[in-house]
Image 1: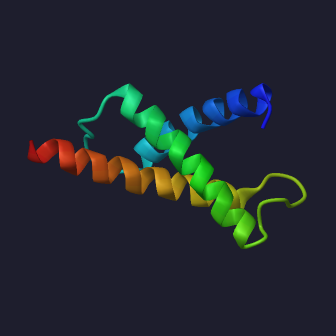
Image 2: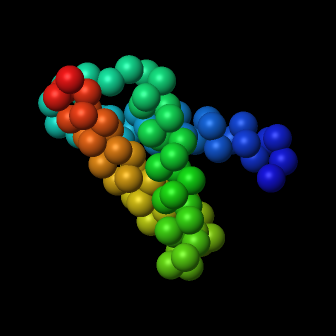
Length: 87
């Protein structure tokens, strides 16, 4: 992976993290850095799942891949928020 691929993965991860945070109802008690980290991880895992199901490279916008990524980010934000809430 080239440096441009890493940078684009970080930027996409940031967007995915914030979209995932918007999907989760209520207030999340996690910081911006947690949101970004969750978004980057969700973007990478979501791309892997989409590639495994052979829906990652379609014509136009890869809506299914985005849904996987945003769904995983929402799950990650909700999980980390619940862990932080218990403390």
